[in-house]
Length: 293
Image 1: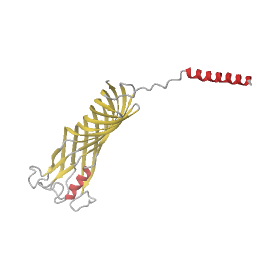
Image 2 (image 1 turned 90 degrees about the vertical axis):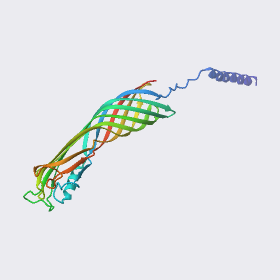
Image 3 (image 1 turned 135 degrees about the horizontal axis):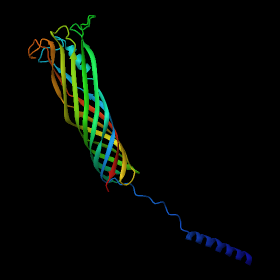
Image 4 (image 1 turned 120 degrees about the vertical axis):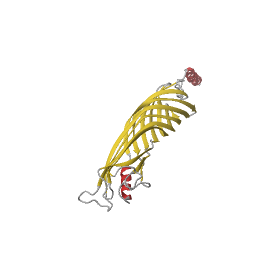
């Protein structure tokens, strides 16, 4: 019995001391959690990318106060010219520039404002050919139809935006939506020419050429994602949709052969041409920013 009691005591001491020793061994510390990137503060950076879009001419002919340019009473010819002329002109090009902004982070949400100025050069041109049927409405084998040509050229020189931003952080990422004002220098040119007049008129070879440039105000909206490489440096991918009305242009189409002179005379065939182009552009660009803390 005594041997059994001694064995139990020894076992108790052995296991108890082992448990005590285990308590003395320091446990491995939890991994250090680095603080999340803060987006609060000013930043400056550079960007580059591509732009593509469409310039819609919004072309109109005012024939109300003058004699019918395209044939006496033949309003269908006016509709034909307007229909052919009002197809959008596709454009594309390159953009690059810089941006300056400020962010304020409140929890997971980031609010900011950004201004940028870019070289912005989407260019496009198009030429359309069609015919004006005579007053009878059909073209004869002898060539009674009058062919006409419409040509366009569009471009831009620079783009600046001032936009608000709102986003949400996730690890080192910032995903955001943005929107605000856009200002751009836009260029637009258009021409019209027909080879001869329809049979119902006495003047022909109508010509119209107009061009203009203007700095115009519009809007820009978009979205993007930005990744913090370090506490100061970040990379961004961004998309913007930009819509700006181009320069309003008006000109008078006048004949080069036949009866010429004062367009207000009923013997002269003239029309007022008007253009109110609208530029709708898509901008995809990458950027690098340095954030001040």
